Image 1 (cartoon, rainbow, N blue to C red):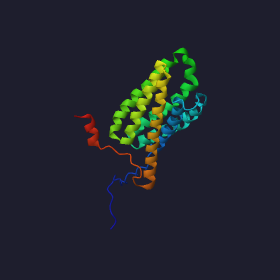
Image 2: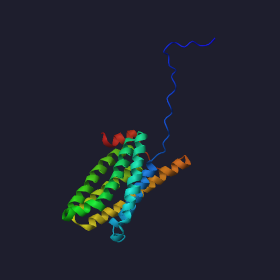
Image 3: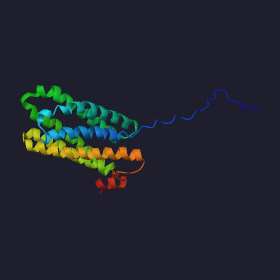
Image 4: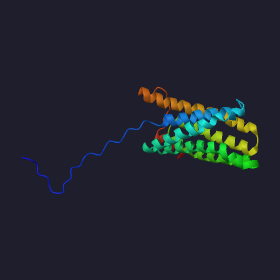
Amino acid sequence: MAAVEHPGSVEQSPPPAAAVVADPAALGLAGFGITTLVLSVFNAKILNGAGEPVVFGLAIAYGGGAQLLAGMWEFRNNNTFGATAFTSYGAFWISFWFLTHYDAANIGGDAGNAIGLYLVAWGIFTLYMWIASFGVSVAVNVIFLLLWITFFLLGIGEWSGHTNVGKWGGYVGLATAGAALYTSFAVVTNSTFKRTVLPTWPISRPLAKAAFVR
């Protein structure tokens, strides 16, 4: 006997499965790490500053574009920290490209104060992201620790006019790039091998809470 459908009844189909999105952190960290590495070589005065324009293509395409994409995918993954970090630093590198191409020529004699303010403002943002990173992993925490120090050193160097302070910012920037590239390497390698090959030392929630709540 055939089943009788009640008038107005609608058969409920299961909701479609959410599309799987690969972890965009490996891409975002690589874009950040490579661009930071190349710029920091010039900030540390390891190479002649005449070669610094090589950074600009990286800043707009890899540090900027790739990180923005990583940030958008982190929004899709419901990762507030990753989305905020990658989108913001992607925008930083794009703004850096505009600064070097257009803004710096219009600042004139007050460039040290203006660029110093720009860098310190990013240092403030990075400082509170470092605090938030205590809920992520030791590897990510180290990146943000080194990065806010880098921004403040570079900013103070611009403000004060002391090139050695900015030079130290370049060296800390190299360490920041190394930490970012290691973490990118760990994420992509662990994902490929489906096991922990390179540790990032995730921080448990109780430990993160204990760091700030007494």
